[in-house]
Image (cartoon, rainbow, N blue to C red; front, side, top):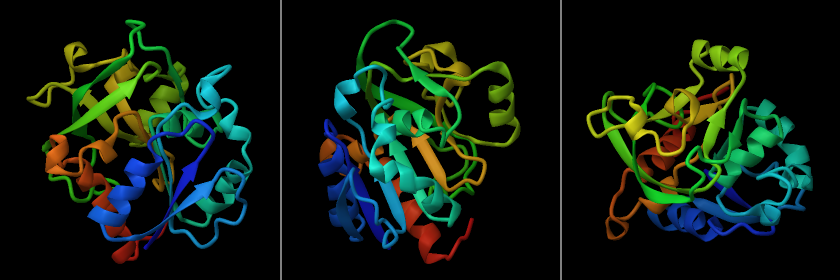
Amino acid sequence: MKFGVVVFPGTWSDVDCYTVIADVLNQDVDYVWHKETNISSYDCLILPGGFSYGDYLRCGSIAKFSPVMQELPNFIDSGKIVFGICNGFQILCEAGLLPGVLRRNDHLQFRCDWTNLKTEKSNSIFSSRIKEDKIIKIPISHGEGNFYADEITLKNIEANGQVAFRYCDSDGKVTSQGNPNGSLNNIAGVTNAKGNVLGMMPHPERCCDPLLGGIDGELIFGSIVDSFIEGDTF
């Protein structure tokens, strides 16, 4: 399987993602500069965390105009996989490739901490390695991670089963105490209707090695590889 890690001006989590793909999963991976328009050779593109274009105007609002982003709709329609993490999630929402927006945390503070996540369904291409009812621990690092959508959009997201992960407590209860940023319905990650695009605020690339304090992130990346090996189509 071939991965591409997209790099925008201001991206800083690109090396983390590259290292996970190359050294943990032993998969083929390239850095993809944001001006690249030929992405046909990749099976999965990762939009990593950072501060693309310094988060000027609004997080992801400038990066959505980068040349590589103009190619993503066809890439997605062909059934290939896109995974946006933190700023990558924000960019995908700004580009209209995922529903909702990410707003300033409700407490107006930047938070860098571990969070507990409840997996909403274990049969997606991003969660097949996560056992049902398993609570995974993934760190966050953001100031604008507050997921918001209007009432109709939120109802559609829930009805279509597009919520991938929710913030919860260590027992798996979805509570306000387990919500680090005020996201509606404790939403930590969503997919597109087709299921081949995921955006999430927590950073799974930061917990794929015991030296970093956890390995639950590998379950998400590994699920992507498994879906390719098993020949899932979308």
